[in-house]
Length: 188
Image 1 (cartoon, one colour):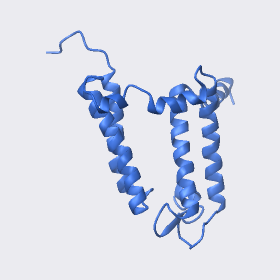
Image 2 (cartoon, helix red, strand yellow; image 1 turned 90 degrees about the vertical axis):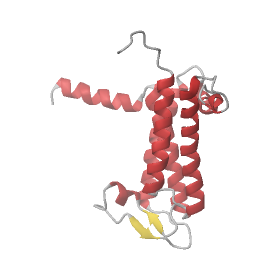
Image 3 (cartoon, helix red, strand yellow; image 1 turned 30 degrees about the horizontal axis):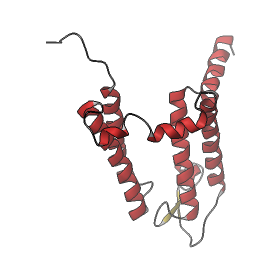
Image 4 (cartoon, helix red, strand yellow; image 1 turned 180 degrees about the horizontal axis):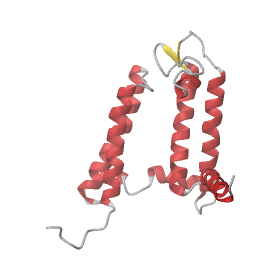
């Protein structure tokens, strides 16, 4: 192996173990969501009829079946432990990145609720119509996912993902567009 290839591999590992603040946000959010889904799966609330096998889902049923019939009691299998361990590892990488900031890990949780997006729910003056639409779209996406999951036990349903992700992604894109500086040149 050449030294350049070794540097690239150590760079990738370093990017994962010491993520930027933006990457740490994704690590924390996706890991917490994954742990939440794993707990629901263990308790039998992720799907009305099936227990998911994470190993089967991620290997496209190469290692084992992805959907097993649900039993009446809680089911804990090895793939649940592996999935929770992987999510916990990435969660620790994300929290480690925030621990090195001025506000610390508490700053991450505070930033979820205290930011410039949520006040735009009630006022167009807080960033214009784009930020208001962004806030409402994001809120509706999360609300739809939570309501559908609670009412239909469909936490991993592709239909609920397609609707909620479209709303959330549209909200995030509009929010970023609302922060873009005004252009000086007219393109006409």
